[in-house]
Amino acid sequence: MKANESKLLRVIAYTGGHNAPARVFRVQNYVRPLRAMGVELEESPSRAGLYPPSRKWKRPFWGLWNIGSRFPDVLQSYRYELSLFQREMLSTFVTWEPVTKGPRVLDVDDAIWVHPRGHFAERLARLCDHVICGNQFLAEQFSCWNKSVSVLPTAVDSQFFCPGSGENGQGRIIIGWSGLHTGLPYLYRIEAAFSEVLRRHPQAIFRIVCDRRPEFRCLPPEQLEFIPWTPENQVRTIQEMTIGIMPLDDSELARGKCSYKMLLYMACGLPVVVSPLEMNAEVLSKGSVGFGAVSDRQWVSSLNELISNPDLRLRMGQAGREVILQNYSIDVLAPKLADVLLRVGGSKP
Image 1: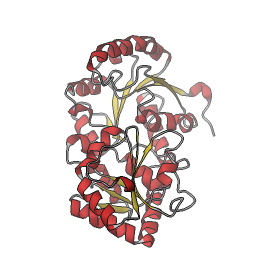
Image 2 (image 1 turned 30 degrees about the vertical axis):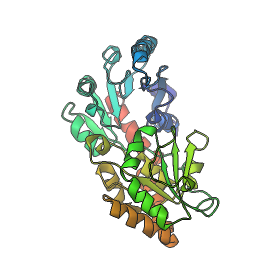
Image 3 (image 1 turned 90 degrees about the horizontal axis):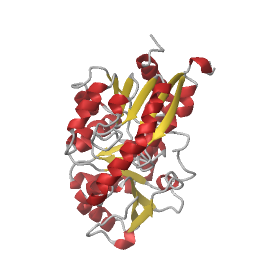
């Protein structure tokens, strides 16, 4: 039964621009289910985008544009009962946030304090009434600055990201990675391992779905496949993969990752090979969904085993899909988000 519209808690969510994935995964996907739970979530995206331009001389103008365009949005907060920040309004700065109407909730899915101007994270956390963190590692840090913290993983739309009609469209072995170009250095670190796997399995292909073409040094071009990411192909390009990978390095920034690549692979029924750090390790512990690999040798052996064993791939892929449905789907996590927002907004005792 839908909540009485007159009793809906009205929340304005300040998000990044169209190039901010968390805008979709941690805000937009929740709009419809939250309304049925008593929360009307309306988005106010940045017109300038989350990330500054690559050319440094353009950045001051971009920043001024961002700040100026946000002022009318800030005034709108006084029409709502709660302000939700999906990270900061202007990258690595606190700007209009203190002027918005409280109570305020900060949603964070990255180790934003590790950036050169990372002190903004503490200030932002302290001016909010509650902080929602994408994993336990983030929660441990933000609890130093705000005693009201909860952990809410990034939810997967499991009806949208779902297994395809077959293992992949052409019966090929496709080792796949999907993500922003900022994650490509994680792939470059274990390029030697990929090279060995491709040498042993000439029928295998390494697929990269990204906003920028990767620049590998020693991988055979005939076994590489680059597909520019688009909203239209984001599901299909994963469904066609045979194995999904998510390498990381052992850094604070990497430990703050919320395993979303891994979760999307699993939602589409793929076995995974990942760096077993923080949340990746937590997800691995929930079922026989794939392998954790630290060294090049472990990456090679894990990928070899999955390439050589179709039955194992099938079992792990099915187990991964079940882990998503039980722990990380919107149906599971939307009620938890609604509970936090209603509690902070004063609509729930």
